[in-house]
Image 1 (spheres, rainbow over the protein chains, first blue to last red):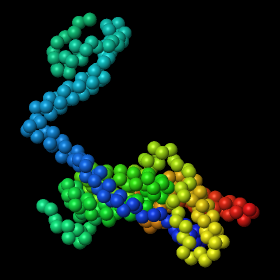
Image 2 (image 1 turned 180 degrees about the horizontal axis):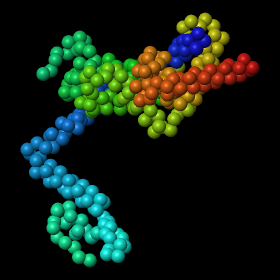
Image 3 (image 1 turned 180 degrees about the vertical axis):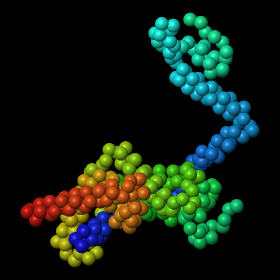
Image 4 (image 1 turned 90 degrees about the horizontal axis):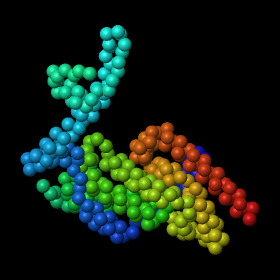
Length: 111
Length: 195
């Protein structure tokens, strides 16, 4: 009850003026001067449109290569092998080996 | 296909917004004129300053135009989406302005119509000044919550959605705002009576 009275008093006293008469015009002018943004999927399909295809494919292929390289390098950085006497040896693989393994090469490394 | 302007008043806000999303400038013009008074009032109460409120309203409607394609018909009410944009624009500006706490002489109109004596008018002016000072002590988020719930008459869940909060957090803001206002106004009142 007291809360209602307080809020009614606040409502009566906290009155704000109407917006300036030209504010709507100013806002409309300012907003319409900006280009509308298309949603993500529309932008993507436009980017993949025939006229943009070569650039888009180059970009996507490059991004895929970078991603594969990062994943491969991170996941295969070290290798642990057991020697004849049972000693375990962990070593860091060279980049060539990582790339070769990734490409499923049969090349044998000798150390 | 463009729809004739005469039929705009028969369309819902959601239908108009769908036209705005397709780039219909006249539908945008119509929506701005329909909703500017409420958007401006929210920004004005949050920011307590006319120039900032105009800037926030402009930012909000510009975002509404630029990102119109992100609005999906049927997913939310247009007004909920608009309130969210206006509240965000106002709170962003409040952060940029580092939470103004100075009192604003123009925010409250002295309602002197019913006052029949100079003494009444002085009393009313003092009350308004006290309220103004008390409101300036609230945080912008508290003023937003009060504005949405008590002036725009949104339900708590609607106001919470507009502010990007959960209902409990919104209720917390309202409780703290009421408590703070009550405390500040009773202190002011006591000082005035003592004087």
